[in-house]
Every structure is written in C-alpha cells, then in structure tokens.
View (tube, rainbow, N blue to C red):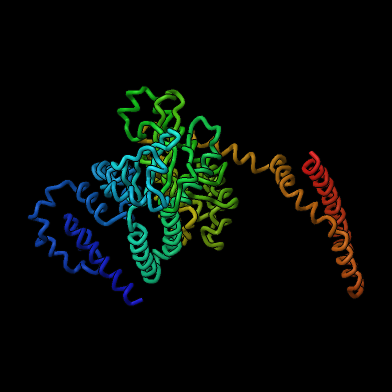
Length: 523
C-alpha cells in the first residue's frame, strides 16, 4: 500500500514536470499545493527555452501525448467541442485521433504471432508492418487472409494495461480525496464515475470484448441503410488482437473530401443523430466513442450517406427505467414542460425526494427560456447540459454514473453534427425517434407485447395457483372472527366490490395469457 502511494506521488510529480516542460506552468502553479509559488512562473525555464513560442494548442496536445493513453482519450473527447473550448486548441487536439506515434511494426508482427501461436504466414498471405493508423490504446495494420479477403488487424500497444491501470489508480485516488474533502465534488459521485470509467477502459483493453460489441452492433443494424458495421473474423481474434473486415470510406472530419464527392452534409449530420438515438432508445446499446476518428462515410451513397463505424471498445447500455426517464425528460424538456422535467428528476431519485417541485421548475425555466428564445438550430445542447447541471447541483442533484458515457457521446454527436452542418436542428432530427419509442412503450400494443413475453412464464406457474389460493383462503378462515362495526360496513362492501373487479380483471388477463401461450407453444 505504501509503495502504491509513493508510486502515485511520483506520477503526480511527473505530470507536473511534463506540464512545466511544455510551458503549461500556469496549470501547475494554479493548484492548491503550488499556489503560494505562483511568482516562480516568471523564473520558469520554459519562458526562455522556446516552449512559449509554440501555440498553446500544440503545447497541450504534446503534453497529453507524453502523459499517455488516458490523457489522450481526454483530449479526444475535448476535440469535438469547439463550442466549449477555444477553436485553436480544438483543432490541434483533433490530431490526437489518428496521429499518435506508432510503435515498431516488427514488434507488432511478433505480438500477432505470439497471440496466434503460429508464424504470421500461416494466417495471412500479406501483413503490412507499416500501420494504417495509431491510437492511444492500439494500432491497426492492413493484411490479407489466406482466402484473399482484405482485413485490418488491431493490436494492443505493449504494456498498455500496466500504463492505463497506473493512471486509473491515480485518478481513483484523486476522486477519493475529492469526495472526502469537497462537498461540491461529492454531489457528482466522483468515485462512482471513475469506477464506470475504469470498467469501460478495461473493457477496451480486451479485444475479444470489443469484437463481441461489434458483432452485437452489426446485428442491430443488419438491414440499416445509414450505418454499416464491419464483420469480425473470430478464429483470428484474441484478447490482444482483433481481425476485422477492411472497409473503405472518407473520414467524417474531412469536409473537403465529403464536399468533393458531393455528399449531402445535411443528411450526414442528421443521420449521425438518428443513429445515436436509435441505438439508445431502440436497442439500449450504443457506440460510446463516436468521435470523428472512429467514423467513416461511404463515398457511394451520396443523398442518404452511409456511416461506417470502427473501434467498438467503449459501449454504453441503459436499463429500462433509465431509458424511460431519459426519453420522458427529453420530450418534456423540448416541449418546455419544465414542471414535468422537475417531477421526473424527483421521481427518478436524481434529486432528493424533499425537493420543492415549484422551486426546481422555476430554476430550470430560468436557465432554459433565454436559450429557447433562439431557433432550436442555434441551441447548443452541450452548453445547455452544462447550465442545467450547474442549476441542479444547487438542489443536491446526484449525478448518475450510468449516464456519464451517454452525456459524453451526446455531446460528441452534437459537436460532430454542427461541424458538418452548422444549421443542424438536433431536436427536429431526434424527436421522431423518441416519439416512436414512447408509443411502443405505452398503450395496448405495449401491454400485449409484455403479456406475450411473460405469458410462457405465467403459464408455467398456473398449476401452482389453486394450491396458493387454497392456502390463502384457509389462512383467512383461520383468523379470529371480527364483530362488524356499522361504520365499517360500507367499507366492507366497497372492498368486496374491488375484490370482485380485481378477480374479473385477473380472469380476463388469465384468458389472454392462456390464448397467447397456446399461440406461442402451438403456433
């Protein structure tokens, strides 16, 4: 334990050193520990070693690259949000998505041979040791199978598990201190959020898990005309290598190429939003790393552009209750039904039960109304989320860790969509998906679907019902007799009537179950 603490201390000192090395003295000297030494910024070597001559975006990017995969991922997330950070920094951070320095290709070849337990020529007729792309966790090489199919081989970086675990442990320690000593930070459940982040990152390090995610997403969009997911070659996929169908397309961030091919940019932006909301509300299973480096556009489909997704290491899921509350929140929010938004936050436990609905409603209205005075196409959902979060924390809102990936991905999707088509109306595009989902969840069709789903289980339990009913009635009969009180006589009749109608309803439902069960078993 002591050695781990010392290791984390040295890592924090190293981070401070790297920040100083790249001329980011102001960040180090702004921390609580070093704040009394702020005057030393004027004596810093970076003032005269040339680092300050570089643009700040370059200094930040180089710092993140040197600090390793976890920090690169943070930069990737920021790069999609030109409305939240200065444009010069965002444009520089975009380079983190496909310009991370690669590791030696011959070493990559040896990793593949070790994982497969055979010379590479027994698995591939061709393997290019020069990588196609290099990212923070892995790099990708082009190859050809023995049957002639073109594939890509994704290979984990050497020792990446150890490096990432070290930084995750450091972040967990920081979260522990934040939750212990900061009341404001405690509301955000930093330990839980870091735990969720750790799970997603560790899953990303298991390429078998990524391959399974890709296969599931491929099934979900098997017949889609707006998203294509490449095929996984399972016999050659291991924990540290993934072999996948090679696809060809234009990087979604390459606006010049998209325009040159005359691809409908409005539809590209709208299809991205539709894909995300469909994954969340139809499938409850969504690609949670939708930054431009992981998305291509087919050059063939011009008017209804086809997305091609890669990198499935980070996948998000939601439970049925979270899914329902989220959909209702979105619908109420964009209809400006602020009271319903406030009620849903209380009902879901996102804010304490004792919260005054009228006060919370008023606070939400104060944030939203000035924003909604603008056309929806000009509303930044990312900025709005930040403002609402600031408001909700005043009412002791508990940040839900399961929504961390969803919030990040939604912000990424909006940033990408607005980059492609500045006039994008996020709500107009997403509304049909949400309304269709709500219709499928509420009403007679939903009830019948649930009964059909649970029918076989209920039928299985039917033989036990007479015995349970006999025991219940026998227990009631064995209770001591109670002398009727006139005042309670009316209530007894009412209770009897209720029991009668409950019995009738139960009988009808039982009939439906038996009918649907017969259809299920006998066709």
